[in-house]
Length: 79
Image (cartoon, rainbow, N blue to C red; front, side):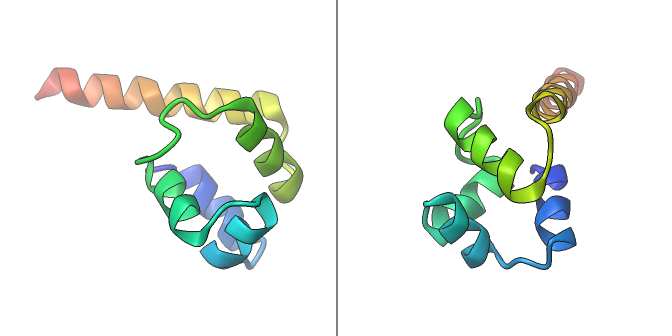
């Protein structure tokens, strides 16, 4: 789950449909991205769109994605 992405969307007062439309993707695809089911390795085009839409620097998105992957790796090792 990309909690950071969900929080950014909510802070902007946007629905998933609105965010998807603004990014040029469907609501269901956006939902899957936010849930972490799609774009497990977020591509630069999507990251750039998210950066512009939510006002998050690309470097911060890279940091948040790295932290998310590190946490997932730790969780899978603990199991």
